Figure 1 (cartoon, rainbow, N blue to C red):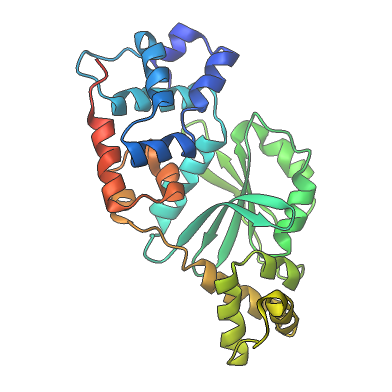
Figure 2: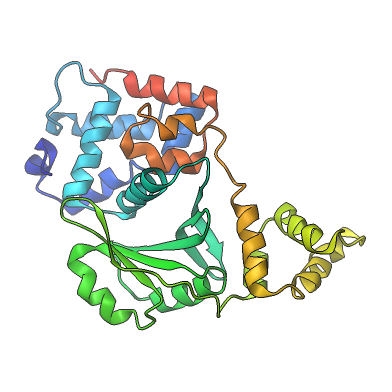
Amino acid sequence: MINAMSIALQNSVDTNLSVSGIFSNSHFKRVISNGRSKFIDTKIEKYVPFLGLNKDATRKDALEAFYSYLLSEYRCEYVYKNFITKNILLGRHSLNTSTLLNEFRVGSSLADLVLINAKSVVYEIKTELDTPERLEDQLTDYQKAFPNIYLVTHHSLIDKYLSILEDENIGLIALTDKFHLSVIRKAKYNPEHLEIITMFKALRKEEYSNVIKEVFGELPDVPNMYYFKECFELAEQIEPENFHRLMSNELKKRKPKETEPIQSNLLPVFLSNICLTIDPTANQYDRLFKYLKTKIN
């Protein structure tokens, strides 16, 4: 997928980092809050001579060209997250029945994506730009909270990661040269490593309180300074697989405020994961769409 920008700039390191930096949650938070982003507009102005756009081109057209460049020249983590969001969450499931969590804290690791529906699945991304240096520790953390785990990587790295993944319960998904996600090895359900303390600490106060109340019928009547400790001691009495089920029910409630733009053709594909993460209100989506429609010349 080569575009005019790819040919003109010949995949320079500075350009790769510069363009990938556009697709950041922080910049689009400014767009939905203020109606513009100085950072994004500066990048568009800088690269517009290389984008091959016509005189009526909009910011959406420019961002689409940037994203096309990343697909071709610099498949950073965001590209993979976006494919998982569009192809797995929205392609196979629905925001009505599923929840996708970004950068979810599990122990001392951050899971790139966690999909919660009838089952819970961790997606750990290792792009061509990454190393497997921390992978073993990450997978160990994830297994303490989730029984289904996939490593997602580029098709050129399949053999490398199959040789690294000693635990055959860990699945492997590859981004193909035709930009599809292909299951190379299916993840196997493995609850034996589930750990109450890791699952408990992954929840917010309201969420673990709901779990405790559902199991025990009431909450600890103690001062705030003792509340976490008392709830955790009760949680330790719950069988780990059952706690995981209850935890997943709570995480599934973390729904976006507005689901229609993400599930429809209103939102450009290249913004699927960003909007799922920054979670705009209806008014903020209006600002975003107005920004995207604005001509750049």
